[in-house]
Amino acid sequence: MDTSSKENIQLFCKTSVQPVGRPSFKTEYPSSEEKQPCCGELKVFLGALSFVYFAKALAEGYLKSTITQIERRFDIPSSLVGVIDGSFEIGNLLVITFVSYFGAKLHRPKIIGAGCLIMGVGTLLIAMPQFFMEQYKYERYSPSSNSTLSISPCLLESSSQLPVSVMEKSKSKIRIISLLAAVPFWYLPKSLPRSQSREDSNSSSEKSKFIRDDHTDYQTPQGENAKIMEMARDFLPSLKNLFGNPVYFLYLCTSTVQFNSLFGMVTYKPKYIEQQYGQSSSRANFVIGLINIPAVALGIFSGGIVMKKFRISVCGAAKLYLGSSIFGYLLFLSLFALGCENSDVAGLTVSYQGTKPVSYHERALFSDCNSRCKCSETKWEPMCGENGITYVSACLAGCQTSNRSGKNIIFYNCTCVGIAASKSGNSSGIVGRCQKDNGCPQMFLYFLVISVITSYTLSLGGIPGYILLLRCIKPQLKSFALGIYTLSIRVLAGIPAPVYFGVLIDTSCLKWGFKRCGSRGSCRLYDSNVFRHIYLGLTVILGTVSIFLSIAVLFILKKNYVSKHRSFIMKRERTMVSTRFQKENCTTSDHLLQPKYWPGKETQL
Image (cartoon, rainbow, N blue to C red; front, side, top):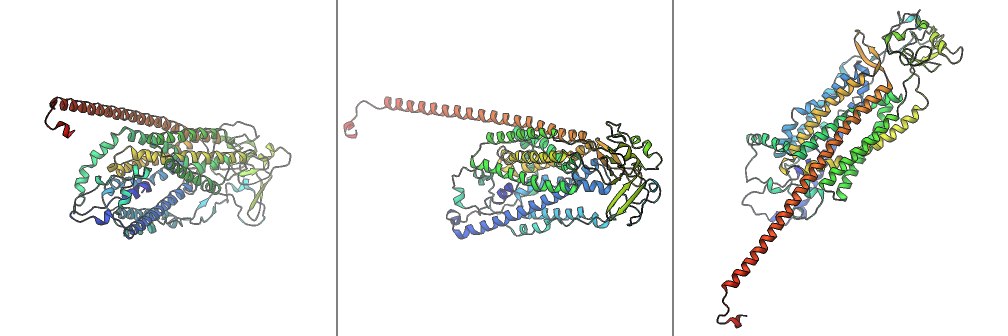
């Protein structure tokens, strides 16, 4: 289902088989009545296919947006979240190669419809755990009553403090729609007849040149059905033919490396925004959906317009693909300078006296100011002191009393806050982490601007790359080539990229949470600088490798184009010389064979 909609339309609109012995007057003289059904069915197919892509993008986008929530919900590290995200691609691997090969020769609309049904059932299975698991519970400090009674957090830490039970409303309203998208495909014919006017058209557009195939390659005798065994015997030779094409193989490697970069970046982008700029999870996902996704859509559309309007050649498409990658990753480099410093967290990034740096070790959480409190070092219940420093818990801040009024909880007489306070007497705090420094919101704005431009630039090369892929292979192997391409992207990029990105991101964790059973849970606090260098650095390194591979693709294309052009010129010159020589020989022989005079010569002249 990841095969481009253009290719699906091209496969669907191939010329239907003309029965032997039947006159073809309708083909030679098409009428408006005959064009109308084809046009209507094509519009239905295009609309249904667009809806399928919408449903699929909605499912994948929603899954990406819930990465951080899944991590907190099940208290798991980023590496395991990456495995969960990558497993979304595994189901496609079982059938994608065979569907792409046999699907081009069988009833394509019904195959697409069956795929939509399977995809719909799969999305229902993804949402199923939400309805059967217990309520979501997370650790958060709360006094035992809703009154304004003063309670000592320092004493409660080892006695009666309990986690608050919160019911997370189900957000699995997306069911995921794919079942409805499958309905129209079951009522569409196997193929549509192509009008004679289109066949005789001398249009030089990209569609008529490269997407539509020569229909003589696909005609079959009357009554001959596709046999699975015969097609299976051609599977390995077709596969060998594809990988023997240097342009296709290099472009496949280029796309695989680039999608490793893009998949890892997109998967952890909400997490990066949360940890780097102190934004909430909902705000991070909202911003990505509001500005980044439209930028990508506009870039893809712009690339298609450029290819169509300027009739760019295959070498031009490769150059546009390469240029967009180079400019996009150069812009991405500027994000290294748009980061925020670590939050001031006592015992982790700053000392309890407010000085930097501090050794990243759990023992640093304890100090003289909280030595008399029996605090847990595994809990993460952040409290923001009036001195601007975040404390892991109110107990570790040495707070003696607390007061709750509605949803607000205020802690007083916090000994650790007092020793680092800029003003004497300010030893109180509130529940939650302190905001980052004043320059961080401005950095976040710059990050959004650069991110939008980068997304647009990188997606601008999407259509040129797709056209390059279609032009470098034989027409009868297009569907199979796209299937192998999609399979490679999923196996070598979609599955491993979120995993190793998550593993490396976990190395920047400063404070791990712990489950009730005592095992390590999800990360509560990251080192912003290390996180930024790992996330951006890995993306840029993979992008740079893909750029070098793109240069190799362009080099091979130019080499093949020059060699073919030279051979064509040499062949034409040899033909012209041979023709001139034959003419000269014919003239000489005729002159020798003809006598100087014969009867009636003047009359005939």
